[in-house]
Image (cartoon, rainbow, N blue to C red; front, side):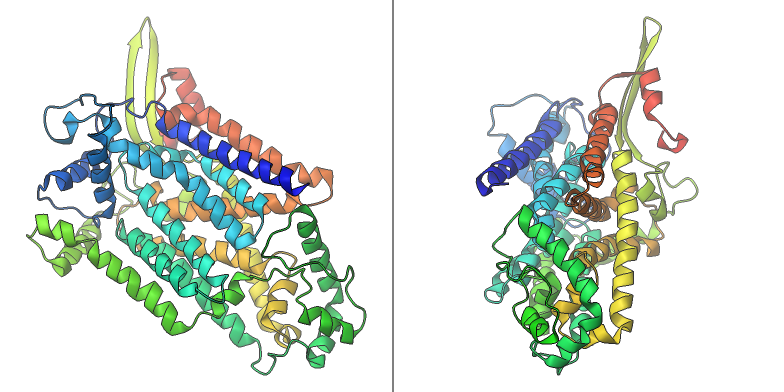
Length: 534
């Protein structure tokens, strides 16, 4: 594909995804002109910040600050409409406290697409990831109401993007690391579980250091004949990787990829050393694991531990000013005490509690709004569920399980194969499998960091706690689809558009549940595939 045509296609695809996300989030945004679900808390708290009214909350304040900013801006817009109540936030049109969350949610598919591009250096990977994210029903529902998970995801994604901007650079990385620290601090300042994004970076950095340690210290010279000789048994593996990356370069050329050189893998060790010295151009020059390993530990600690903590502390200044009953540390104790005392996932704590292991399979969504009435002998139902697009979630779960298994096998192979420990880390990472270890490990670690800590939580949990991890499962599915899309076999290539089309049809089928559109009782029952979905 010519560069100009490819650029036009990418621009059209990105704008199309953003337009789709915008319409889905803003169409009928004030359909229910009253607080829905946790809007009775979060929208009220945003209003209280705007008016300087003291209150107690069990989450950090940043998400409600943003709702307050949305309310403040709304008063200057020519969209004034009375609310459903006579006091507090209920006097304001629901659009006033929902629009800013919808705006943040509209951009999340863009941030996911950029993140995919930064880890995979493939435009098609980014476009597919953005498309899949735009088709998630849970993210859509959360974006359409004055809830705060959308802000958590936004700041977490921006932090990850800035971190990857830093690891791709030899110079000027401090600036991007500081921005990443600010993003992660803001994520933490929305909800404590926002720390999952920061934990993902810690895990990725630890893996990068581990792999750099596995590579012998004496093997810094990639021209070493010993290294070349040790690679002779790996020629078939090198050839597999060469063909894989060559297909990538033919489909798209990016500034991060060095120019193509010899069309074939050399047959002699001496030539192989030259092959390694020039990185062969078939190995992307900005491998994220290698780049992360180059970040000095003191700089990493300063920007990604101290900076987030400072941002978190600063986020409390205004709250403590209008609510001086508790100091900063006492407030943290109160929050921890509340979450420690909330009941578990069994019993009658809440009808929509669900254990962490049920989330990937979308076993127990949360009902946000329900209304039914009868007219002319027919029952009409309006229902809003925090409801992931089922087919998308099931495909994504299979993809992330496969990704985790493959990454584990890669790491096991690196750890046990002496030949792989006798040459430079860059070669080890790329020759151990045709699939880029950086991409797989980033996705697997990000998913685990946002999902597995919930194993340790004893309080009542809900499916929306899975939202951070779900983004990495979408990335895993996008990576798989992008890989098969690059295959020469037409049958394999057809898998990618087929899966995307199935997810799109599923999104349309369940969209009345996402958007709160009226359905007949029969149509509603048709969409409730499990008894636990009610």
